[in-house]
Length: 323
Image (cartoon, rainbow, N blue to C red):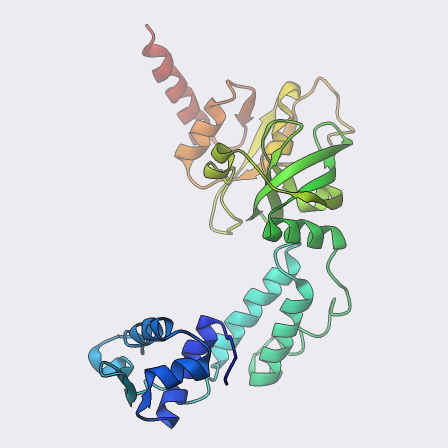
């Protein structure tokens, strides 16, 4: 093991069986073999000392003795045995991984499919009811959209991007240079949150509306206030969360570009003088009321009388304060 530089998690997972097989080894020798400093190894041992089984009572925690410069393992808490996934654990992991694969741009699809295949192989695909073979069948040969890969890698590497982006409100494609901040998943879509140099503000760019993306040879440098604030005003997709139908005036269709709001009809085919109907998921009535008030009546909820009444009441209360 000399010269190896494993990650801390891998090192911690290997430490208990390592020390159990080398009872009484000195911290100096162990640090040399594990490829870390003695100070780092001591920190790892201190962390292991408070790890163990759920319940985390003294009899559940890993027991180590290392105060005299030598390490001895008293109780392993099961970490000396290879880990095995239960059927429930495997099912949960497989469902989560497949959900990530189906959401564009969130993860490296090829890597996620490899993980799915390994889990299925480890537990046996037939051990997971209803999921047998799903990781290697539909879409297994299809790779990730190269544009999504470029955007995700630019976020990871902290690089600026040049995008050809379809604007739903203008029914046109625009060329933009943006400074990525983070990725967000909302209402079954992945968005790039970035500082748009053309608009001079933080904007959300939906992945399936990005026609092309090119990583630039310059760092992503959004203003400090842009990084500290967040456009994640809408909560991630959740079947338990409410949704409303909105009516948006023609001069406020820019909302379709800046928020994850889905038009219910084609924007291009509509009468230019008519409002647009749209769908939006929201987290709480209080937040939705504040959101609607900010547009001064140009955005209205049309299918929820309680929210509409709350907006009217809040607006009247605010107006009364100026009398």
